[in-house]
Length: 190
Image (cartoon, rainbow, N blue to C red; front, side, top):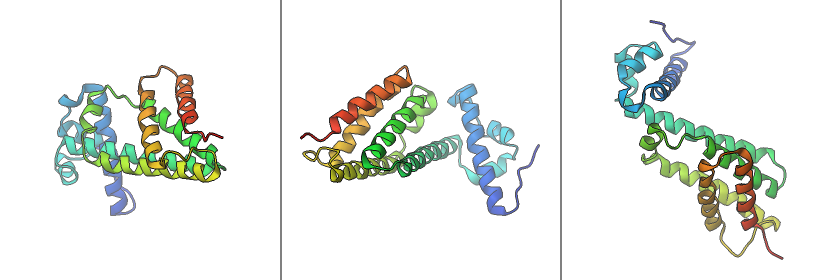
């Protein structure tokens, strides 16, 4: 059985944690969520079952940690995109496009998605996403690019819900059209 080891104990723990999440997701994709066991995850990760139980109580806990990691990565990606654009309108459009592309790429109909999307950690992620959108919209309002007759909070909710339609779109071009329609609804009127 291969052993994961790094320079420090903290690095080792992080490596075991990450390898466990990756192994669990791969096993679920291959065999389905109901057939994955802690033994399979331990074997694929290359650690003992007892060690695995030191990190996670059960397969469900592993999958929730995996999902939380995915959400965190997506939010970090959106923040990086925001930081690279120069002007408020450009930042808003870039983040909305990236968000819609992320939504499109997520396998929403999978058994894994349906199980992890019921967890309370989503409320925190939704708040962070809403704040990111709200702040971008408020910048757009201040720059005169975004309408000021509707609150940024309400417009952020509108964008999030409108762009979830990307999950059903067949192409990236269709996603770009959805974003264009959404941003048209945000534009300030003379």
